Length: 183
Image 1 (cartoon, rainbow, N blue to C red):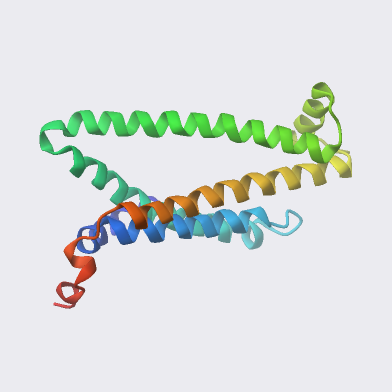
Image 2 (cartoon, rainbow, N blue to C red):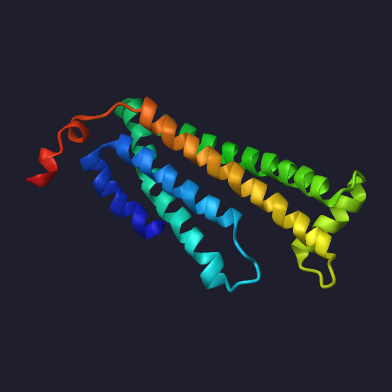
């Protein structure tokens, strides 16, 4: 993502934010959806790495034009405040997402495990997540189902973000007329 973000910044100036804020979240959604169906018995480089790369590419396409759009909307006089608010909102949203998705994971794990006792569910989830040997097959399957739900939920949110970017961000002249890029 660090390598691609600087490259994306160049294209964001040429293409405008709308195209990149549409394509980037959709690519990230594809990576997240692929993570929902990872086979954990296969090697990391074959199962997890490709979707993570796709997610990183999607984020690298999304973040620079998003930041530029926020900063441009605020204007030079309010750039410092806009940067601070943008950073604070991103951090708070991340915290809320982790808390909310953690609750969804726990509830989904509990449902698939078939237990309503929070202490038993918590112990089973802790055993799975810490990699304890001898974890019941049912607990592993419940965790995979819960993780799949989380990945599909986040993929859906990313896809919605791409649709919102397409609908709400105004097209600039370079998107409507590709001729300046050809010169």
